Image 1 (tube, rainbow, N blue to C red):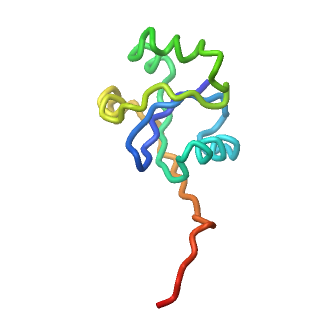
Image 2: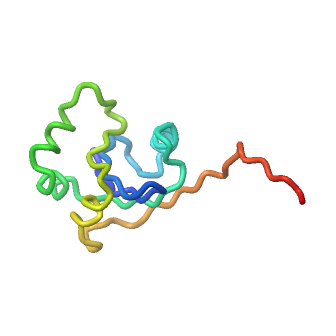
Amino acid sequence: MKAALVFAGSGPIVILTSYPLLSDPGLLRTLKAHGVGKFIACELPLETVAARYGGHFQVVMNDARDNDDLRVLDVNGDRAFRLFRFSELGPPVMHDDEHPDRTETAA
């Protein structure tokens, strides 16, 4: 399991995922299905995340309703951003959908 701080249009969130990479095509599809098509994500040490979230981390890990591919640990962007130091973030992974459904009109 990996943990990541994801900076998206609606603000930072903390996720847990079983995908091996934050750039894994399966994770990208899953995030897009949840409305996150453009983001910057940084991996977080799983032990640090577990310690900072305490019992809530265990509740999310044990939630049978969630898919093992992606579990959202925190949607409170202010709290998610404040809980981690920049020095704790892994290298950024950037993803930007090409917006294939957007149509451009000529003036």
